[in-house]
Length: 618
Image 1: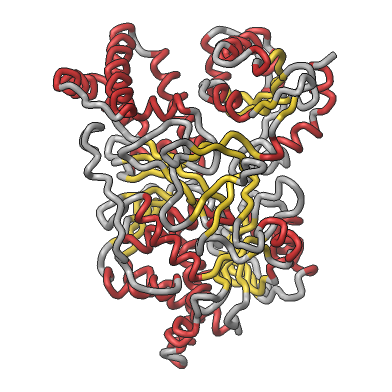
Image 2: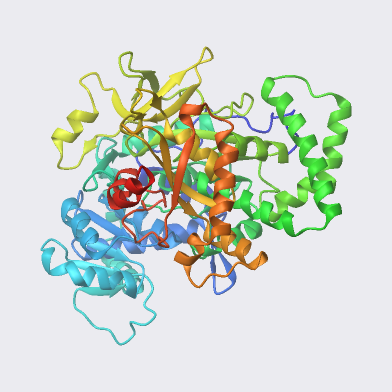
């Protein structure tokens, strides 16, 4: 990263940097062109292991031949039930190279969800990460007559386990090597036989309003979109990226795996979701994409560390971030930064801001990318004040990821930017709903023609369900989900996400759901940040025995009330929250209230905690 007032190092790339009209064709062209160069790294037992393009190609070839030896036919579906690992990528590329359809399943899904997703997708081969995921598959396999084989990546704890339907990934690769000897050239035929119009991947929606829907994406759509990404966010072989979001989610599948496959940027895999902060500092990515919750967590970590710092450090930070904010304000306005302020900013970076960036792990980042959920504009400004541009993108599963994006030279906090040049975006004149059209839009929902017809109109416009506005520069802004807009008893339209984002800017709040439809005033259900609130309690000698007692402690209640009071000052009287309730159950990704990306499900939360909500209105 150079300086905020010189963003020439963030230039989109418009030319095709890797040929291939399908994902497997593109991958094998990449292997041929980049053979000995490192593509992926993964930390195993404390040591980072590198995978070159040649090594990746050899592994993918063996797995693909292993699948063919098992009778895996073109257009059959294989599913992957695993955390984000290199083996996930190997399995994905092998399935696609063999002419199949690849489907991802969240590792947090319960056995019944695994059954539904395998049944709906007609899965014939299921890759599972370890014994924990294998247990889910074994529990439901009797109800999956099409499932022929379960392939286990990590056999730890399964050395004595024997089952005819189950084999290890190593055994599959060995089978593939034998198959390759007798069928040389068959994989190349399979790759050549894949057509751009063929179904490539299934990405199931999180199912917040019913059963998950399988969004179908063709090879043509994936290749078209990944080329388009480079016109939105520049990346090349010199970049270091971090792969840690779920690969069964469109964001990491497109923005991580396939985008890096196309550009040659290195993919670094974290050890597990809990080690993300530590691994970020080790990897120091040059381009870093994450969801708002991650950016909020990094910010809160800095704020907590600052409270423990001495008065000199606190004063130095306050001065430095103040300088950074003045520079950021001028950059946001498109005004020239005076030389005197440039010198102050360089000193601010030297004294404090660079240390903050190193503490997070973004000291080498050319820019940051945020998406998948709304983010507080103040948080965007804070990262900009550190000297790192944060670019917000917007899209959804059905648009193959990003459809709009903030250009680095024209950052507008609170906006999702103009339409990406590879698709059209407009507002429905009657409802204000954001509509998208382009080759990146999905083929439809698997087995659900009626749902597809509801979402895709006859002219090819995708109805996103997001309501927004657009300014004179063509920059869009999401105001809310159509189904989430609150109409109070007084007839006032409220967009709850704005207040919720304000609350999530606090290091003590992880998520929030504002309530108030057909009510006299607004209330909010809040999920606290356990780690930071526990530390607050310990630092202030506040007794608590468990999570529930922590949320009920009067001092914690007052702590959250203070956050709400501060937020209320930024909103009109009718938009202010009058009462709150803290979720007293510690939630994890396995709980039904949370989506796999750890967002509270608004409708389910309102249903499940109806009694607590009613209590706030008595």
